[in-house]
Length: 435
Figure 1: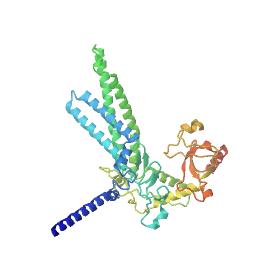
Figure 2: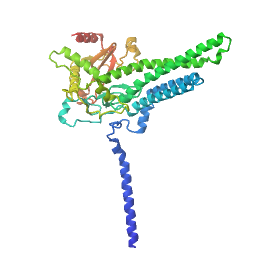
Figure 3: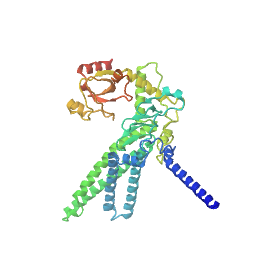
Figure 4: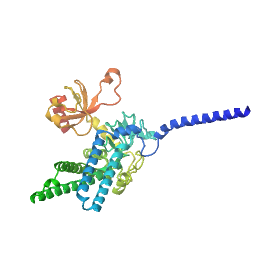
């Protein structure tokens, strides 16, 4: 009986250990999410497989990858129909190069959308509380912004080393995916140039041979196919358009990588130089992250595309401080708030993308900054900071502070038509800008 009791006790202890192990295994995903792997760092918005798939299988990425696949199939059809019957080795080499280049383009494109830019942790604060006055505070994320980080209204989060929001990858270009994005914008024009050469040669081949057959009395329809020519012309036009668009973007991206500047940081430095032109006693602004073109390029571009660093701490130029750029941003924001002009809304605007009722100039010349439209009502006050043709950009001055003693947490900002305010107010705003 004693032996049986001992065996029962051992079996119960084993079952308890197995239950404890199962509980610990169930709790493991919470620990894995906080991993220090740079490819999983702070990707809290799309941390699950299903959410990453939803970001990847969106209209922008689907169209981009579909275009790459279409141009690849068009190039392979030219290789098989033109080179394969007579020159098999040459056709095999070209087919291998075409498939490899297309795979590399699709890989870079998919990884840029899959990993995302890397987001700042919610309620992030610097380790040293004395550094808080040198950092910007994000009301939407309820935390401070690390150096080189900015809030994206489309993603709804603060992005580490934000460059810009790209609808074609359905995400921002930031710290985690900047290398993959650079691989894509450099390889895609090369692949499209290769496709243009193949399609042009095939069109020339078919037209000249078909004309020769027709001239000597043979049936030219042996080679000539209207649908094939139409598809090749479409592929040629699409590939040429990608060369112009993505090639120009790639040039701008490489130029920024050589200077270690994002698009936002380049705009900050432009405003810094303008501010120093108006202020005589201001010290010259030195960009703190310029380490020389080689180190700048290696900080972003690598063979693997993986990011370097954690996105919070960055190597600095000798003689520069960690918060030099963020202090400049705070000064620019303070100057912008002081120079804001209050406007009284006299005509309501619903926030629609195409406000036809406000005239052709307003409807056909919208601001291309990617910022939101702001709905306004009659009687509201907007603090306007800048304008573009028939539009104003500003922040809605809340009346909630007067009514119930507190204002909304997140300020409402956006573009609205200039026709929402009176003509006299626009005239006074023009005089204020000139002075």
